Image (cartoon, rainbow, N blue to C red):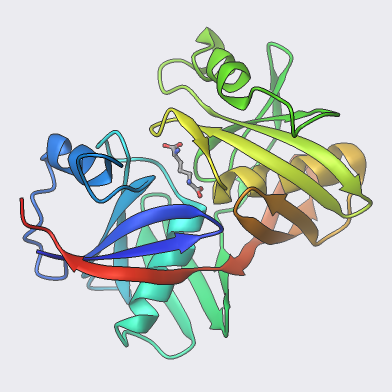
Length: 257
Ligand SMILES: N[C@H](CCC[C@H](N)C(=O)O)C(=O)O
């Protein structure tokens, strides 16, 4: 089986062209092994590109633990680049993911990915929580570089108010009037990743709502820079949300197990 490896701001994924639908989709142990950084290829997740009768393609995303995940923003940008590399579209595409339809545009190095509309921001047990396709807590801190993101993130990730699914946890530090530095503890990877697309989207919307940060919000992550553009609506609803940043292929190979 052939595979490709892509990364978007250091969030890395195994991409498989599964348009013939032969990937053993229920084999969670196989996906986990392929994502393992010692026993496999190594990745934060695995994504299948499948055929869809109504769209250019369908995205099926698995976290590194082998379970099918909710929406992945960086993975979404990576599969758009993959579909573009496969010649499935020229500059603009429509595809289906677990949270519904997405449109995206390839513009040189950058992918503009339209995210699902957001229908509110909640306070749960003192934590700011919203769903951008995946569930996210957003917490602003002063000293992000020295923060123990894994320990602090894990404590909230399993908090009973987020049962049964749990949540991803983002920590953000204000850099200037339109820029944030963000680090994320990702559920399903159960570790800090270099960047999380649905996470930085969540942070940008909360920064607009709570800190009046204007559109677009610029985000620095451990793996590079992203920006998030949006159209604010009453009651913390948002539409026309775009996650914008680079995504590229880093290698191609053959799975032999
Ligand atoms: N890395 C992903 C998030 C995956 C979401 C996953 N960790 C979950 O909530 O199941 C992103 O760029 O949006």
